[in-house]
Figure 1 (tube, one colour):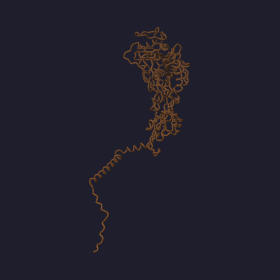
Figure 2 (cartoon, helix red, strand yellow):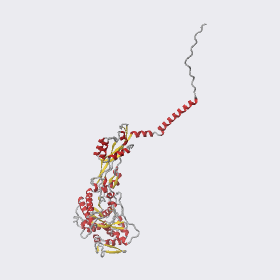
Figure 3 (tube, one colour):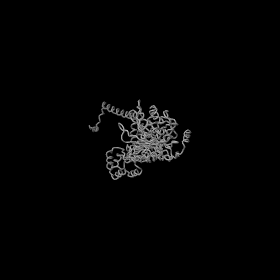
Figure 4 (cartoon, helix red, strand yellow):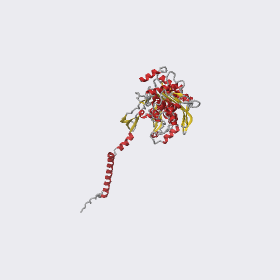
Amino acid sequence: MFKGKAKPTNQRAKKPAPTLIKWRFVTVCVCISFALVALISRAAYIQVIEPDRLRYEGDLRSVRVKALHSSRGMITDRNDESLAVSVPVEAVYVDPVTVFKNGGLKEKDRWYALADVLGLDREEMLTRIEKNRKKRFIYLQRQVGPAVANYVAGLKLPGIGMNDESRRFYPAGEVSSHLVGVTGIDGRGLEGIERGYDGWLSGEPGRRTVRKDRYGRVVENISLEAKEEGKPLQLSIDQRLQAISYRAIKQAVADYRATSGSLVMVDVRTGEVLAMVNAPSYNPNNRADLKSFKMRNRAITDVFEPGSTIKPLVVLAALENGVADENTIIDTGNGVMSIGGARVRDVSKAGKADLRKILQKSSNIGVSKLSLSMPVEALLGLYSSFGIGDATGVNLIGESFGLYPNRRRWSDFERATLSFGYGLSITPAQLVRAYAVLGGLGVNRPLSILKTEAVVPGKQVASRENTRKVLDMLEAVTQEGGSARRAAVDGYRVGAKTGTAKVAVAGGYGDEYIGYTAGIAPISNPRIAIVVVINEPQGDKYYGGQVAAPVFSDVMKSALQILNIAPDAQQPSLQIAKTDRQN
């Protein structure tokens, strides 16, 4: 029987069915679940709990803030003459990271040119950049002028940029430097008006916030804060009088080889300071000249014993307290008086003298007897009411109040010396304020370094009648036989008092002197009070009448002419008294 062929078998073997290993499957699912939960949690944390972090990091890469520089306010004198102005300049800086991203310091010639134009040492500048290659900002030079800035921009060095700045310029230079002051490299006031009124003058800088792309192009303006310019300030000083005063005091310091000198001029009607100068001075436009001993405003910081210049106040106190009148005669004897084992001496013998002659001859014995005839509180009270030992009102940094005595018990000799200016210390500004009160017929007004819009009323601290009597007596001091003849001014009635005191040192007095003169003009209708102080003049001339009185006369004469004040020397006294009653 024929048998057919057998069926061929399937050559492809069937794969066994996969075996599910549960623990592996579970492990994979758990890992995937954990990863998913972690991603969702992280996303939630970033988006919900801490959404600002990435935005902050993104802003660091794209947002830029540019400061909008505000100019400092201008300072002018009472006639709008510029005393301090701000001029635009640039600050040159370097970004070392950008420098080394763009080839570094290979082009030495261009980098050397940059150092030369900025006045920097070539190798020191390059070494500084090399050592700070990871920094993004380093100042190379501040306050460079437009010409230098244009040259730097023309070099087209990578990483070199410029920021807008301003530099203070002082047209008056050393003439007004002590009063106006100076600013630092950052534009903040360091001395004088610049420091005292820094907040008023500074203003507020603005800010412009933008977003930039990777190529530095602005793609979004985010915000703009407008800048607030500094406010201008008008001072009370007259630059013409300031210049005349400075030249006179500088010349006197040079002529007498003095350590220093000061002059303060005040309008007695308003209390405005018309001039305040010191020598030696400094040039605020030259930072190499900024030395502390030159920058001190000695008119408000340095103190001295007022000496004989205080005697008019003693006479006024005697009149106010009724212990003397203009006809009272005081016997000064032979010029020597013993008080408690000590002696008071007169330089010029006055004999039997009335109050006018006491002032004219500057009798120490005369004023000592007046002081001893009244309570010490009465004399000190009048000193205080005239501003002695108190702030003057100029509101300048560094002003001294002086040394005002305050004791429970006073010896007779101490009371005597108090009457001729020993035992207390004052500043030139305090002394000129006291004389301004005399010139204001007993009205005490604070001094002002700012121009006033209206006259400050002030306070009546002494009677007009008695103050007028003292002013008339003070005029005799500048006339024939007086101790301040060199302070007289032709054509004008001038009242002045000179003084000389030894320089106080630790434990007593030194060998040096201070000479000074204080006075008022014109006596018929007082307008100006001036105090001149010459500190430690060398040589044979050191008395106030020798070194300070001529300066007083020259400056007072010029000031009266500049202010167009009519001469009054020919006016009869009867008419003057009538005018006073009308005023």
